[in-house]
Length: 431
Image (cartoon, rainbow, N blue to C red; front, side):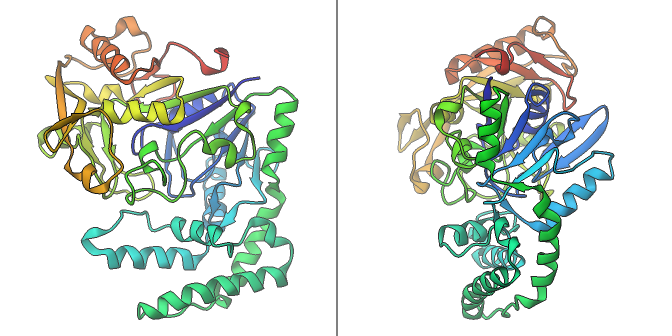
């Protein structure tokens, strides 16, 4: 039995979907443990494109069971829609291969409305949320007024709880001179969706325990990236959940001793969606070129991603925060054709060199990157599957990154296709 956690080491969009899809071939169970449908994963399999934002990536595998853990917030409308979209692509989904934690909290339409109004009122200081209601749903969870999937079992109890949620948020809506929302407008629709969802539900901790006792492989799939973590990210420009590896157990129902290996997914350059500090962002032609060659548009929102050079300070910090054992290095092919490639090897803050990202938002905005420049390579590396076949400059770039982040690179992706990857080690065979 080997249990592997997969997380992003930057600001999300590192290419986790492809790597999780490959690893799920060896996994008996794939578990999503945090976030909601604000996290997009794109899979390209034999030319077919699958865009997922809530269902774990392993769902496209014929013999893999997937689990949405208790740490995930679930929009019932989106869940049913995403299931239908996959079924239209001949992906079979049933309670045999999809399990949803009965303790997962629900995202309601009023959560999305509150999210959108807040962002609008922030104006130029907006946080850059997806407007999907993720934050307000987590707030209700922490405020102990949230609705869970297990609440679908009793209609009167469900109605009483949803009314309390709407009453609570209507106080704020009124204060903002916005129209109050009537829970009755959506109650019956949500209740009917619940009846479709209930057959998929079970306690997630119980599923984890069953797989553990059968000595089967479990893959824990993270969403977003390390520096969107509510505690360890570039607060307040973060998501509303913990994105580091420690959340895998909390968000599914398992202790830390169950975990064997943590794989960090790391893009060969750096991107960010929305607002917030970005020390190595390139505002010139190179940033534009990275965006074009990398097709850097958000899977969920379609927003153009901000692009910049690889930041070893960030990734080294992510390695420490999640006790990462190995790195999957993605989108190396996007660097094709660059004469010179910059690597951020440190920051300056008020004239002093520092080797970490400070916690203060003001300091994060002030840090300046210290760059090292490496020679780029000619030609295309798209589709290369052997390390020896890479240009010398690409191999030197990989080795330099490995040394700077103090973590070994165990796989290198050379295109979005599942098969276009250089595999140096397999986490499921290392423990």
